[in-house]
Amino acid sequence: MTILINSSYIVASIAFVMGLKWMGRVETARKGNLISALGMTVVVLATLATPGMTYEWIAAGIVIGSVLGAVSAMRVPMTSMPEFVGLYNGFGGLASLLVGWAEYHHNAPVWTVGGAPEGPAPIWFTALACFLTILIGGVTFSGSMVAYCKLAERVIGGKPILYKGQHVVNLGIILVVLLIGAAFAVHPGGQVTYALFAVAIVLSLLLGILITIPIGGADMPVVICLLNSYSGLAGAAAGFVILNPVLIVAGSLVGASGIVLSIIMCKAMNRSFANVLFGGFGATAGSGPSGAHGEAKAASPEEAYYVLEAAGSVVFVPGYGMAVAQAQHVVRELGELIEKNGAEVCYAIHPVAGRMPGHMNVLLAEANVPYEKLVEMDAINPTMNTVDVAIVIGANDVVNPAARDDESSPIYGMPIINVDHARTVYVLKRSMASGFAGIDNPLFFKENTRMIFGDAKATIQALVAEFKAS
Image 1 (cartoon, one colour):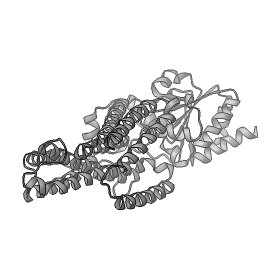
Image 2 (tube, helix red, strand yellow):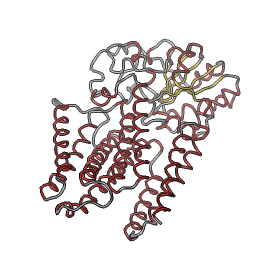
Image 3 (spheres, helix red, strand yellow):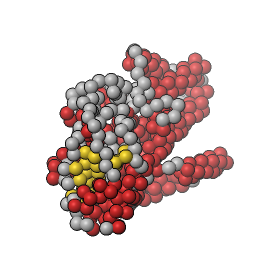
């Protein structure tokens, strides 16, 4: 039976690697998702077949977890998916923390009398793995809860929270935790060590909160990636604790992919990893000169229709506002009508548009927008001065010219989609309020920009009606 189980783990690990590779391409993403799910099914069935398992608590956990997961998945709207992802990251970290704690609680009496852990690993290695599991799991759980509150703007707002001596406090906690970890690895048994272990759990939860509250604004998608990576690393550490090879493989894949994606997103914002983690983006937004002055010119959907009807090329630039308005389906319908009218249509996607990685790609895919019509920022910008009309739907920070022109702006240096280079720009917004980063946008006052105020979905529907009536 052991050989069969280990063979299943190897097959599942291969499926995970292949799935991850296939999910990197649009054409094979669905197949990659399917084979990864099959791999996970094999892992679950093989683990349940392990001799000596008791199924009562497992069955109870499956029932409770399935009910909670199904209900929450049905109730959570598409606009809240970033928060939902944050919650899932946190639950993954909490699960790893509980595994590490349970294994330590199980082994502590044996280690106290000098006994060896089960398996080939020495005591210090298993003890250190337990410690890393609760440390990373605790940071992931509490950090994810803070990220959830920031994204949902519940309890605490989305802006960074900074205070004097913040980095010193964080560094002090990290040093204390590392000292406890070293002591724990050397002498893992005994009542005093157990008390230190409990202190480490509390400090890990506190550390997760303290390292997440300074992050906010446009940096939140990077935080979601990073916490996802932490949850994978916590799972990998838990795999070393319970000597489960497939958990080590799966956790390592999640951890590594999350780190790589975080770095890619930092590069997309032209910022360093350290600057995102410690920079407190947006904390001082609005306090300096923004250069956003002038009089915005409003337009009606009817007026916009006449310009779109004569356009030869149209670029949609979606943002979080499109998700809030659930406008992706009518945007696709309008795009098709404009194409039938003879114009070229594409959708420009900024790497950090929305509030989680790939947010806009998912929304447009849901509306059956062909993926080949999605154009990345680096590809669309060189041609933007040839575009007749750019329609900005609820995107603010990723089209803000201050990032390119205003050295005093908090986002100066961040690559943007240069919609202001298009011949005409329509910005669909409910008001003149700044975006999630809290930064004023000079685009609204450009000579070639027209603001169409109101709900984005209603505005697009009005444009669709104009095309259908013509």
